[in-house]
Picture 1: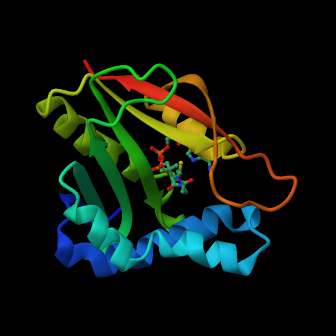
Picture 2: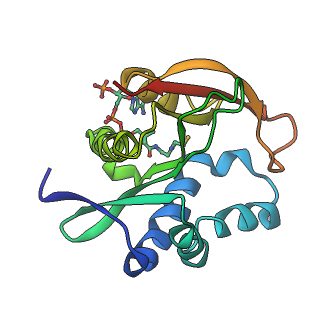
Length: 176
Ligand SMILES: CC(C)(COP(=O)(O)OP(=O)(O)OC[C@H]1O[C@@H](n2cnc3c(N)ncnc32)[C@H](O)[C@@H]1OP(=O)(O)O)[C@@H](O)C(=O)NCCC(=O)NCCS
């Protein structure tokens, strides 16, 4: 892989984040949606304007992975967000980690996670957590490989294709 760089994202990265997010989400999860309007609303939460709002939040930390100068993946983290199963103190939530299709399976996700974990520890967090759609085996496989453990279930709030499971696994990784 050529020239991969992971950096903390700033508002100047919002245009690239606003391309990676909708494209990566659609590539992985388009089949969950059969309603174009609902799908649009979901994609919009990954757009540049939404990313600018995230970047402005005091508890948000965002990283972007660039290859040959262009954005290919990103991760968002919220310091102080507690896992929803036991509300354990000391948490940081990783609500989004998304790579463009051609960037997957090459260790870029792990590089983004390493940056987030280092930051979470520096800010006194003792664990990171995330949730993942139950059917997204590719993502849960990566999380297990990276040291996350399944601690329970919660329900996706969006309107998915009828019959599609809205169950999400909640996963936690302790920081040592
Ligand atoms: C989930 C994601 C962030 C993982 O990042 P990644 O850089 O691809 O992961 P890695 O290359 O570090 O792979 C780690 C392990 O995950 C598992 N894995 C990753 N992709 C997989 C796939 N398509 N099928 C099965 N297992 C997979 C493997 O165990 C892999 O280790 P291996 O390649 O040594 O076998 C990335 O695939 C992605 O962005 N997917 C699309 C968006 C998404 O679903 N995001 C998660 C939302 S909750």
